[in-house]
View 1 (tube, rainbow, N blue to C red):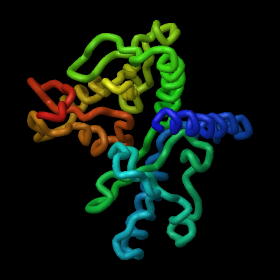
View 2 (cartoon, rainbow, N blue to C red):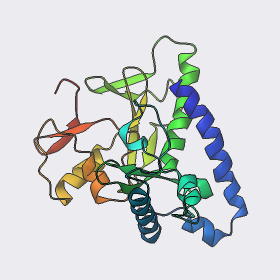
View 3 (cartoon, rainbow, N blue to C red):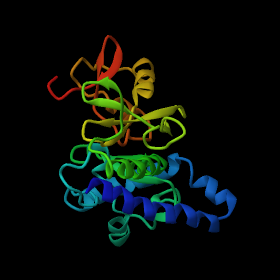
View 4 (cartoon, rainbow, N blue to C red):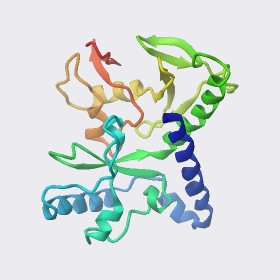
Length: 242
């Protein structure tokens, strides 16, 4: 089911990205970058909505097992229908941009953040090759073991020219795409988390999920991430039994 989601979503995403050819170059460039003013405008709309709608927030209904940073996508149609926002931001997916607007901590303190959909598209592309491979083999294309239950992707088995990566929305570094024992794909954010541990004040200890260091201090959430904790002042994967 998860593989089907990536295929269908990728098709629609590709159509939206291709439709960008109809935009003037200046407008296209504007739709590729996070805009602080747009974030603040949506943030105010969310706060006004919550105040006017008895504590509710305008989000799309998602399954309970949806990963936390992709779970609370903002429903711009609700914001517009209720008169809290005239239209979605120009860089939003709904307007042909490359970002999905999402919320973190929606119940207590809803804060507007971004998902970079170019990451979604990169994972979808690798997932297509993985599906082809799994149709002929019993196991996913495991590479080297990184941690318990976490592996690199054997790109040669998938017919790729190099190890798959995505461009980090935080550092612009190339981050590896990795997989779990079930063949689900994720982004390895250890480079960005290591930078965040050194840059931002925090009180995280071993066993606590440190991904909010990125979500709290930047416009972006670490989408498609496994949980991480801290050990010896470095980010490590957070195992379920920790």
